[in-house]
Each structure stands twice: as C-alpha cells, then as structure tokens.
Image (cartoon, rainbow, N blue to C red; front, side, top):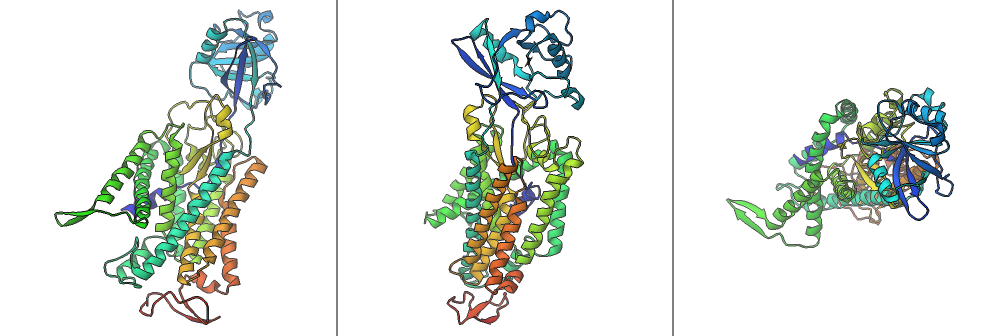
Length: 546
C-alpha cells in the first residue's frame, strides 16, 4: 500500500526548476519628517518604475478617491496636473482610467482597491496609449496613510530589482545535492545489507544470509520499472495525468494533497526509524493478542502522523510552513530513491531520456497551445489562480496577495528569496525546485551505488562520479538560469551530465556490458574481494581477468 501511494504521487510530479518574479513596487510617502512605505502592483507594459528610491521623482499626492475616474467630469486639470492621483477601482478598465488621468495632466495614477490586488492589464493595443505609471494599492493602506500624514503627502514610486544571486539558490542547491547523495548512499547500503544478511526493506523470512527468496526477488522485479515497455507506459501515464491536472485541477488537487500527506508521513517514519535503529535506540516491544508491537514504532508513528496533519492544516501559511513542507519533501524524495530501484543502466537511459523529452515538451512547447501562453507544467505547479497575470515564457508575475486561498499540488520544494523577504512590503517570493529534479537523476545515482555494491567497489567510484555529475548539472542549471534570466528545466542539464558520466566511468573501467545489463560478477586476480557467496544463484556470475 505504501509503495502504491508513493508511485501514484510520483506520477503527477512536474519536473521543473523556476523562480517567481513579481511586478511589485513600493509607494514611499512622506511629509518631510515622517516616512512610510506601502505595497503597490504595477505592469511593466506601461511606464516602468525606477529601481531605487533615489531615482524616483517626488510628486504631491492628490486624494480623488471620491471618483472612479472613468471620465474627466468633475475633475479640474489644475488640481491634478503634474501630481500623483489616487482614484478608486471599479466600473471601467484600467486603461480607460489611465488615459483619462493622462489627458488631465496627472504624472502618476494610483488606483485604490477594496478587492485583492492584481497586476493592472489591458489589451496590447492599449499599452502604447499610456505614458504614465499605472499602479494598484490597497485602499486600507491609503486610509492608513491619511491618518498618519493628513495633508501634504509627497509620494515616490519605485520597484527594487531583486538580486539574481539570492541565498535561496544556494539553499536549493544544498538541499538537492544532499538529498540525492543520501538517497543514493541509503540505497547502496540497503543493497549491501540485503545481500549479506537478508535484512532490509525487501527482506523475507524465507531468505537467509546472502540469499534472496523467490518471493523477494519477484517483489523487487515487479514493483517498479523493469522493462522498456513498462517505462513507456509509465511516462505516457505521467503525460496523461499532467493533462488531466491542467483541466481538472480544482478537483484533483485535494486527492494529491491527501496522497502526499500519507506518503510523506510514511517516508518520515521510515527515515527516522532507520536513524534510530542505526543509533541503537531500543524498540521496547510488547505483545497484544499474539501481535508483536514496538513502543518506539508506535510513538514514532504518532509523531510522524502529527507532523503530516500539521502540514495539511497549515499548508497555505507561506510565512513558516515552507520549512515543514521542505522537510516532508526531502524525506519523500529520499524514501522514493531508496525504495524504487532501477534494475540496470539500460532502463536508466530509457527512463531519463523520455523524461527529458517530457520536460522539454511541457515547459517549452505547450505555451504555444495554451490560451494564456503559459506552459502547461507551470500552470499545474503554481495552480490556475496562484500566479495572477503571467508574462512571456516561464517567468511569472505574482500579485501582491492572492485573490483566494489557492491550493497548490505538493510537487515542489519552496525556499523564500531572502533578499526580497527582507525588503519586500508586499508578499514573500519563492524559488521552486520540483521533486523530479531530485528523484529522476537520484534513481540513477542509486543504481550506481548498488552497482558499486555488486562489484564490491570500496571506493564507490560509480556512486561518487554520478553524484558529482549531478552537482555539476545543478550548478550549470543555476548558471544558465541566472545568465538568461529565465526559468530552466533542470533535467535538460542533469540527464546528460549524469548519464554521460556514468557511461564514461563504466567504459573506462571495462565494465560497460555489466553496467548496462545490471549483472553481478566476481573479479579474479583483483584487489576487490568477491561479494557474492557461492550459494547465490539468482544473479549471473562471470569470471574476468583484470
């Protein structure tokens, strides 16, 4: 049941690394002695805002919130000429208000809104007609400013450009490389323990030391992707589910939230139990009705379930829940990499290559077919209403506050952009890393780790080389993203780096045939001692001279 839940969750994993950039700015109000700043939302398609306060022009602020400014009636040009004009939102389009304000001689148009803030937009033909900044602000913020400053308010508008090289990038890099390393190492350690003593997650009471029972072998072969046909079916299923999520997001999102909460609780239990077992923590077992129960297991299960429930309840609290969400995401990826081994390098090549094509298609090709020009994958990752007004490519403009509490599919880690967090008066901005960018190459790293066990490589040459290739691939992804100022599908770089490196190592060592087929063998006349005992017959054993 646990494996089935994990597999279902991974079917809808979107493989994507992206950053969210916001068209948000700051309204700086002062009266000579007191200053205060408020959040505004603007659209770069109209006149852009300066990036620093020193570059911003100061304008007298005129309160015209008694009108919605759909026409110039009742407004004297002498009152608003060369000033920042504040009017109410409603009844007509933003572009209409902007043209009326511009014709009256206003230098800036501030639209006060009682509703949630959205990026002020218009038809493409309307943007060229307006040469003044058009922004939205909260009406309650304007009322607060009136109470603080009364009359004589001076306004300056600017939009600080977030630093590209934010520390959140390094946090994401650290999380990804450590998770993949731990997942791969755990898979290899489990394989070694499984072969030597028969005790691991796939152990069987009928298997002795150094042996794998028929039931156990069948379970390991049939539980996941063991043939090219199964890989093709699996990738086709992923494509189908992603399309279904695009059209039926509001219905299916709750199903995947429930599945993730169950799978992450199970993964957290497995990871914590393995750590406690390694530390020698006693289990304190007892028996009820011929059923042997563990005190440690019961307490640990209660804690893990409680943590998962807390996430479910507070999953939309951006200010702190991202830490708990990332913890559950890390253990989920770890558990998946460890529990779903790929049988050989051939399957690794087919799976990773197909997922690379899948990633490129749903990130770069689908924007040509969607109504709003946003990739289908981006739409699923962020939700249909979570990103507000979107612009070209994979760059996303997020409103200062969501129109509603939008549910998001838990398929990506989220780390706040700390530089923007410190200075932003609007909303937290997040860097996002999809689970697939860890799990997909992590499965290859795990296979390399198990192959090191099969050939008794004490230096873990395959594991270390594939992990280093993953690190270099992530660094390349980040570098391209920063240089192009555009989101990148990480698998575009991770798949070639890891596959080519692993194949090159196997070729240089003369083990490419065994690495490709996933066979075990003993090496004679070598410093490596044979791992497999004579009684082991389930894996082909060949003799080589080194």
